[in-house]
Amino acid sequence: MSTVKVALIGFGTIGTGVAKLLLQQKERITRATGKTVELVKVCDKDTQRDRGIALPKGVLTADLNEILNDDGISVAIELIGGLEPARSIVLSLLKAGKNVVTANKALLATHGPEIFDAARTYGKSVAFEAAVGGGIPIINAISTALQANELRQIQAIVNGTCNFILTAMEENGTNYKNAVAEAQRLGYAEADPTMDVDGTDTVQKLTILAQLAFGVCPKWQDIPKTGIDTVDAIDIVYTKQLGYRIKLLAVADATDDGIELYVSPMLVRRHTPVAGVRDAFNLIKVVGDAVGECVLLGRGAGEMPTASAVVGDVIDTILGRTKTTFDVLKLWAANRPAKTIKNPADIFGKNYLRFLVEDRPGVLAEISGVLGQHGISIASVLQQETESENSPVTLIIMTHASREGDTLAALEKIDALPCTFGKTLRMRVE
Image (tube, rainbow, N blue to C red):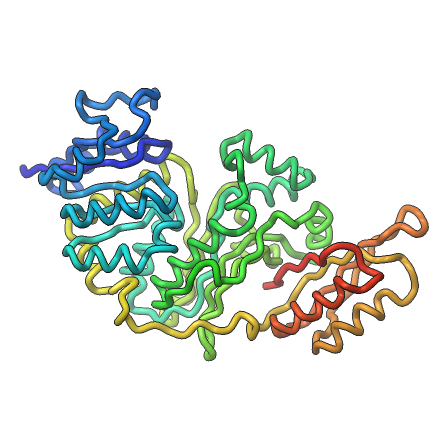
């Protein structure tokens, strides 16, 4: 039986899980590949920390050249994350004749064209199942199982940290700050959770899904995004009264005018599958013209779920499946047919608006007047009772569908009114 040599760069939480699977499940992997798969090198700056797994002697190294210069290594796994040195390392691995497996969504969302052009130049492949949904096999589903479909929509919860925070706020009645602290205590959130809670992580994953499903190649920085860091406990209460839950969604919607792309906290009806996703779970809904709605649910992060996707990519790479898919789909290729991206200002949708306003007659008329000037009609109004006279009051307005550009222009004017305090909170409504 022939042997395939594999190397791993990055020995953190996910890297440790990958090493566990490759070393402890050799029989399972051999059955899947028909080959002996051997982890021959693990490269990391820290060669002293105990990861709870014993590597064979000589496997752990801090010298990347031991991998680059070993012609016997055919598959290299990049799990260091971030942009640099990950970008340089991946390009060097491809040049050295290695097929690459990565879970690095930031790298692909930012440098996808360069990485994939290099892979084509050197006749290698890049597999990235773990980059979007952790253990959820969404990349394989779109690239193979759903290829008979013209995809119409992707709607996804792909950040478990945010979903945990929103779940805690609803079910435990806690505020945002305490929910974040609990997520950090349980290991769901980083010490600095900014990239999760401000929507950056989600929008980078949406960029990859949009390329995969529709061929579009936007800069992730250009996709409109709003995080959950402005959501307050009062929003949980009000949206529940209105029959909704709040979920941070990544949306790619194919319309006659182009692909709508955005990331936003969204009010979703409580009886829907999306609304029912609790805790740190992820959900990705794909709509195709033939299959209809297809929903995938699972853990989008964590050591072993993500390691499962990474090792699955290793197996597919060894069997040649990744290269076949890679060649057929022409991902991030200049000559790949792509749909157009719709101007974000022209996207239509309903909105939930929360204002903090003076408690006096005429305030609602002032706000509704500005909305009316921009063609935005009101569907319903809720107002919180004040505990004392002259205290600011919370005002909730649900709108009918309006153009995004008009909504933003109206809110800019409303936020400048003497009767309003601070910036209006806006969330989209499904």
